[in-house]
Image 1 (cartoon, rainbow over the protein chains, first blue to last red):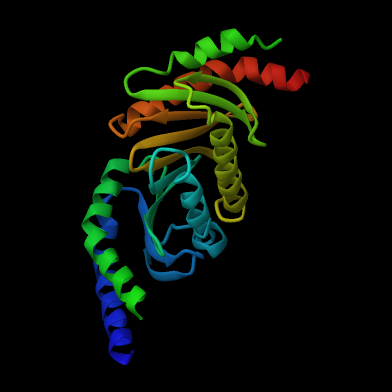
Image 2 (cartoon, rainbow over the protein chains, first blue to last red; image 1 turned 135 degrees about the vertical axis):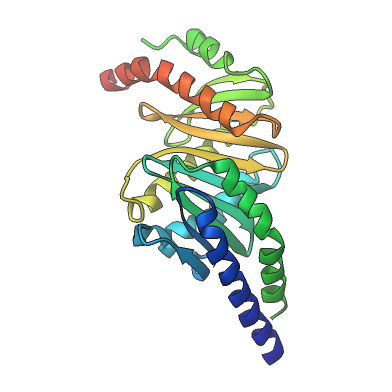
Length: 134
Length: 126
């Protein structure tokens, strides 16, 4: 158990550095975070202009239930949800029990944000597998 | 007065290029109009889509200063579903995965723009 926890800590540190490195690569990207299904943050990086309330668990935790319901719409399992607001867009990707979230300004390039998701896929999957084992 | 056939014909115009069907529903999940390939599950779809919208709208009020949820896109293995607010109703569009996100958004904006004024008038008189 101790070695698994040590591995999870190392994994989180590695992921945190990777998120820090990727954050400035897309114009308008304000936050990248990994949280659990209830919205509790595991790893997070953000810019100074991010409204702090966006990363509240009550909002981040919406995805898990919405994703499960979306999987019943008859178009297969839900992989991500994009929600657009007047000033922001929030992309949440299904790695349940983990959720990978990008918060960006509404005019940020959504395609590039999904490209970032591909870059992070292996690392988030590894973290998910580690957490599943512990 | 709302002309159901005319409304269905308007919604049908979106059903090209990989878009399966278009629904108009109220925020309680009741189906108002439907255009496309019927699989007899439209009422279930309407209820689920409305529920997802309401969850995001309610929970984002405390989190996002913008206060207005405008659009949700659900990306799934076999397709995409877009939900957009029109007047006080919801427009829901089902598309294949091959339909680009930009095109889907553009279609929804044109359709919503066209329906906004007449639906607002109807909602305000009821």
